[in-house]
Length: 104
Image: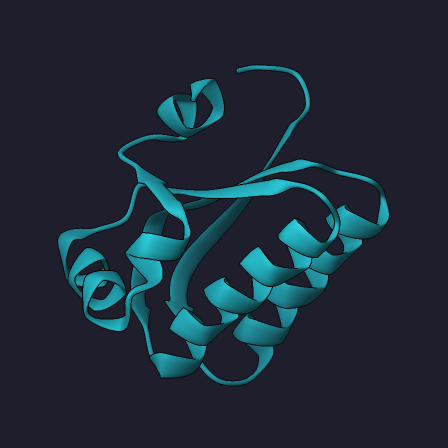
């Protein structure tokens, strides 16, 4: 993988509460450290509720405000439908794999 990409792996469920807070604080920490390229690996994510989807937008906003780029990788078909219904797919680039997200 290209040097300079931070990969954040999200597994299980991304719902209101600890999971969302943990993701957002992890991304905020990366941005604070000056990380400009962030890939969120969702290949092990089974479920996200509306707050989980909202946290993706929040993370994207944090990264962009820090002058960086964020990409999503490994999104399952159900989550991809949710991203399309909510318009998230128009805001952030989505790739089949982490390697493809990092290479783009």
